[in-house]
Image (cartoon, rainbow, N blue to C red; front, side, top):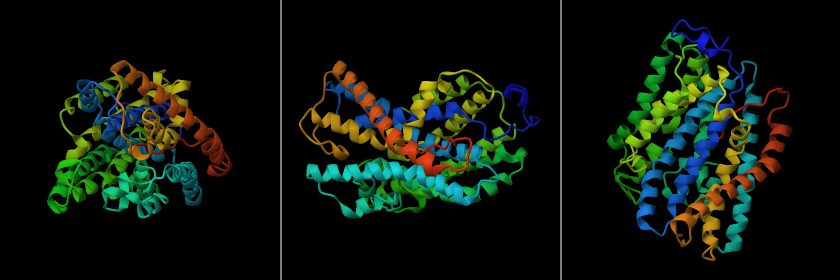
Length: 399
């Protein structure tokens, strides 16, 4: 029976959870690619200032969108793939071996490179980065000057993983008829976080990355793990909506168009600087659920092709290495080290800049494949899921 036959408003029959959803794995590489495009704006790439300005305007909101996508996706997939007999010990072991081996290998390599390059290592920030605790510290230095800055999102994910077993008990107690209501309430709560920050969080000291928010407010809205919990819960509830057969028959193309329209409409807004990235929450939650429903319906799409699924599988490794690889390649043209983006860039003409961007992306994919093949996959096979017959599709966040 297909999803179309199963889903008919409130009268739909439940859908068995745990079925593989390859399109969601593939969507991870789309989000990782958007993160790469976003981070490429932090060092001038185009010598034509008009082109560079246009690139910055297009890509500046991609980062907030992608971060939210991964937080919602984590809640969705964990709920979808959770099994009643899966004990806490096995659950936490899989999360540990999924996250930390890749992180520790990249962390160690970056420390060695920093020593070789003569970079000053800020040890408080570095030591907080090691156990992935930096997002809990209300200091911008702990985000920007960590050994591997993008791993702040893993600080957030660790809270999600820790709380998930309890949250799943609570979500499972929601009556199916009220799931949409609770998804809406969680989304509204996420939308109110910036409002709460402006009302209750100190409006000083300022931060150079935002003209309207103080650093404590920006940290509270964007980086503090507790503040991002609502996005994770929305993903969990949306998974239950699909599992209980209450997802309407909406084609993914329509939802994708909704996300695209939301992005275009918000281009004039500086979502990160203003703290209103949660405007993407509802479109992204619908997109994730609709894509999963398409997989269950047996639809053949670009996202469930073998190449896209493979790229999704290495997306966590890609995320961990992409900034180092991209900035190092860019800095090498000026005979510098690019660690942490601390270098003076030499912009290119438009066509060479585009070629460099594509070439750097492919280099990131290659390095990610090495990390995945030599570290992540062997570790997960050996320690991550003993006794399982089916690999768990749990995404690691990227930004």
